[in-house]
Amino acid sequence: MTTRYNPPPNWPRPPAGWTPPAGWTPDPAWGPPPPQWQLWVDEEIPLFGARGKARELAAENGELQKKLTAWHAEATKLQGQLNQRQGELTQLRGEHDRLQSEMRRLGQMAAFELEQYRDRLTQQTAELEQRVGALSQQVVVTEETVLLQEVGVYEYRHPLTDAVAYQGKLATFQDRIKAMAMKDGGAVQADTRWTVSGSEAKGRAMIRDYSKLVLRAYNAEADNLVRGLKPYKVDSAIERLNKVAETIARLGKSMDIQISNDYHRLRRKELELTADYLAKVAEEKEREREEKARLREERKVQQEIERERARLEKERQHYANALAALRAKGDAEGVAQMEERLAEVEAAAEAVDYRAANVRAGYVYVISNIGAFGEHMVKIGMTRRLDPLDRVRELSDASVPFNFDVHALFFSEDAVGIETQMHARLADRRVNLVNQRREFFHVTPQEAKTHLLALTGNLLQYDEVPEALEYRQSVTSARVEPVSGTSSATPGDGPNA
Image 1 (cartoon, rainbow, N blue to C red):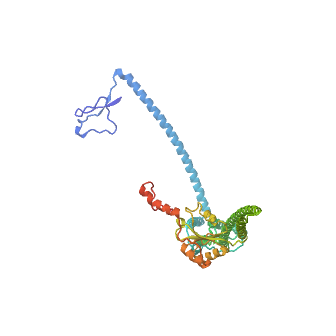
Image 2 (image 1 turned 30 degrees about the horizontal axis):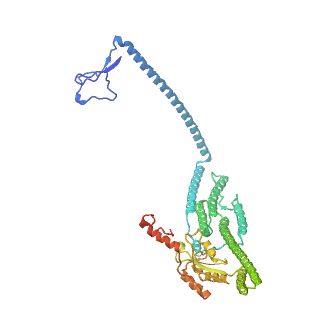
Image 3 (image 1 turned 120 degrees about the horizontal axis):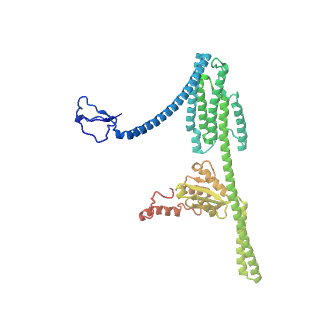
């Protein structure tokens, strides 16, 4: 039998076949149903509809059977998982019972001490690693760094002749460092009179493991300092390494563990020797570069002299042939003129030979580049070129935005001496205090002229105001172009940008 919804007579009639959904409640405005009114009544199946209703109920029963089978399968699966978890729980309980039995065997007090030591070591290790990380990022400004920036002088702590000598010295120190870092080599000092669970062997093992840990942290910091060392930052590196050693000693105080003084001293000297070695390598490279530059310049001078000699010899031969022809003709006036020209050529050839033999002879020049360096900087140098402007043109290459302007260019039999004296007079005005071949000075052309006059006595020509044609045209263009609308440049976008 099935039931159907039976609305009271005083309620609205629902549509045919309508059944109240789950959670449905009647509208209070409808009023209460009559007393003892049944909202659900049995529904009789008519005779002629019995077979259809039976088929409908059979189909519904089949669906319910499928759902019941699925629920049984899910329940079986869940039961399997439950059994697995219960097995794991049983295994864990067995492990727990075993550990408890082991603790009872060792004794409650010994286990408590071991746990304390473990916690203490873990905390100290974390503090040590945090401190080492902070030290790695810390920048220590030292007096030596400031000194180098101000005067550009590196002071060797272990003066040796060359980089090879420093390599040998470093190798010796590094061998000693490796020997001390080995087991029982003396790199770490520690009190081995510790016991764990009443066992001295376990206490020694614990101290040994902790010693390895602190030595590894110390060596990691020392190795990083060596790898990234700059010669002028050696004091900063040593100070950082000192702080690492102090931190290890402070954190290991409760167990009397610290880096030994001998090992720390070796690693400090390693830093000093590494800085000296790097400085010496840089010095030798710079010296080699300067020597190559000097040899290149010397080759250019020799090539120029050879070309000039060949040209003069060709002229001399030409004039000599012409002189012989004039003499054969008996042209006295022509002979006199040709002899005069030949004498000039021979005098020029002698001058070239003199320049080739006298390495101190040459041209002293004073040049500037206001577009690149401003109005208060000049370059003072000398060249042995027969055409000194070739040297000036070489300096005005792609490395500067504008050509150099020449203020003074004069020949001297002692050009080297005049150049040296000019550099000595302006030593405190040097731009590059490290590389003496960088011949730039913080002086104006007028100041340079005063010193040159004091050394030479007279100057045939000296241009105090530089022409700076390209620079001045660039400045003018930068001011004019925004007005015409052909460029987005501004006056600030000049050649110094």
